[in-house]
Length: 546
Image 1: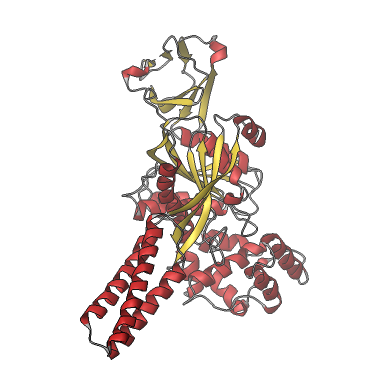
Image 2 (image 1 turned 120 degrees about the vertical axis):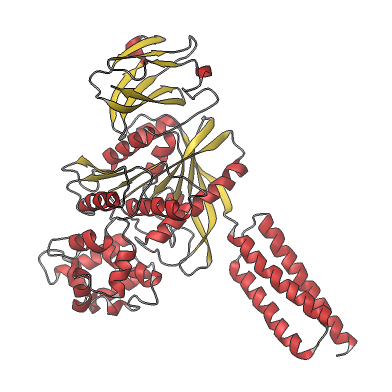
């Protein structure tokens, strides 16, 4: 090799080193990195290593190329740990507007931030995900975290980051003093590919990675609001399934990072392989046929090595064009559902989703035969695992989309693992999937509030410097409360241990007195939680009634 050729290689290595330096600097500066560009660069370095190795034996050049190769791979590791990419204020909502929107009294206004962050997709690649982070306005001191998992949405942009997809429930949580994260889920919002619908692990990971991003976000935001160690998890419909998955996976895989305080999944399909199969592909009418099509597309992506790879392996021929159009994002879920309903009604007086499915596949699903389809359904059941934190599954008795039996099955199965505090809570015997949302959400907030510890420097009632005294405790008849002379309280609430609101007392009924006595004889014995609300602060203490 001549000197000119050696100089060319050295110049090439210098350019490569400069490129690696730029990659590394961008990562440290939290500038979004295109993973494909980084991988292409790594492959080019590898190719040069192989080429030069055949032509020269210059140890200095080979050592430098090998160094570039190693550093480039370390960039991937750094990129994997880069959680928060970007954020912007999406909307600031006043307390009054929230009350008008929700039709309920709330405690605070909310700032909602649209965020992007890194996660890992089903194929093991780094992906950019999106979601919403909601911060209560005018609150200080450590606040609890909450995950809100959204329900089934119509399309890629019908998600919380776009102030859609049922984001109002996340808004409600934040208005009650919870710093709330609401992921869009994989395959929705900014995330590439088809959404892995009711796929438990990807639903959980979207929320968990957004929790990690939240920590970086709070530092970037530089606000007086801080996080305490409490974590609450909820979601409605598909979000109920996703909430249960997040609770399970955090306790199983991320217990060193987060501790779940309590969860309240609502109207969720926890038993995919059993209860939902019975409810959706039996002989009773089920109008939400698009859900089944989306589930099949989801599991095709998640289990591509084993699940039927072609739509024609699963569905009858005439239904495939509409499902394929949905997969290509040419139509939304509502349009898909209507197209499938029309096709089914061509051969039946009622909408029976089983008519879409090939006979051999239907036999596998209904009879739970040993097959990759059955394996995929069972892999996404979230109705049997050893929960540590309390769970309340809110449901309504006339839910036409998600069979209420899901909650009862999950209560039995999770309790059978040794979990001590798991209950299915009937909200309304006649409530439908739509009418159940508000009362179930209010019950969820009441349940969370019974555990909530929102504190500032003077809000811990077990410390003498609060100046608030509750006595006697335990009590059997009267509960006395003494406030500091300059303290203005608005409301006192007493909750059962299961989160149900029992009694509520307002300051105006006591003329704002700083020495009051509450008759608790009708409340019932046991452990209860008393909340004292003062402006934007909440004081919490456990009491025992004998």
